[in-house]
Image (tube, helix red, strand yellow):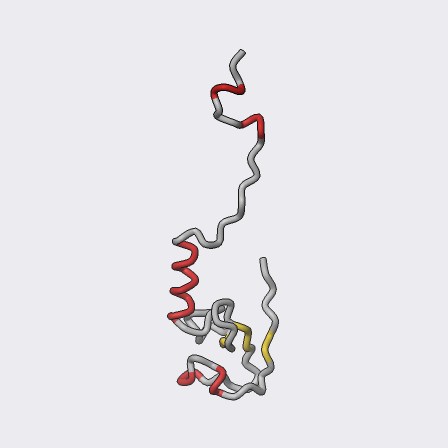
Amino acid sequence: MTRRTPVSDTSSSDDVHNSADTPAAGTRLVRCPQCGGSAVFAPSNPYRPFCSARCRNIDFGDWADESFRLPAETDPSDSTDAGTHLQ
């Protein structure tokens, strides 16, 4: 699991995508994993840890397209090549 680094609470409301939900003093802000902007990390943000529905949907689309897959290491003994396992 990746740890998110808190962003300074002194950032301007222009940095927060949800400007209508301007964070109150002491509210924890984190970096949006999609765009890198500030995001309120509180139950009042339904998109957390993302800053907006747009960033959440872009991330979901990347998962659906399998953009986040890891390369598989193949075991030579699992090969399905018929010519190498004939006895």
